[in-house]
Length: 123
Image 1: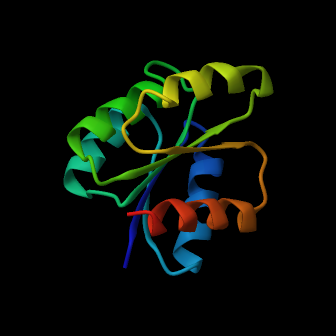
Image 2: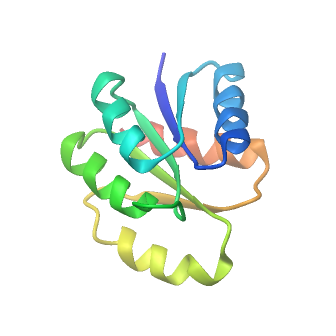
């Protein structure tokens, strides 16, 4: 089973997204901060990191950078609820070796799973 690490500072969002992945046949774990997610990624190496961009403390882009460096095979999908942030997110993710998926919140579970599957298929 493919592993997904879901990271969002909103516990309800993280837990709901984790449940969506679990119901779709993935092994999924939730983390509620970038620091917690980095620790978790070392114990539960994910095939896919799904993370919110805007979080207190370290943001999701900083986390994605660290995960990409430590786990180069991990695919990354970022979520942002701020449409005004999309340009900066795209600019930052262009620096990654592998393509990074970007979705805006809220998004339909089918869209999320489709994007995740596309990223994982490119592994």
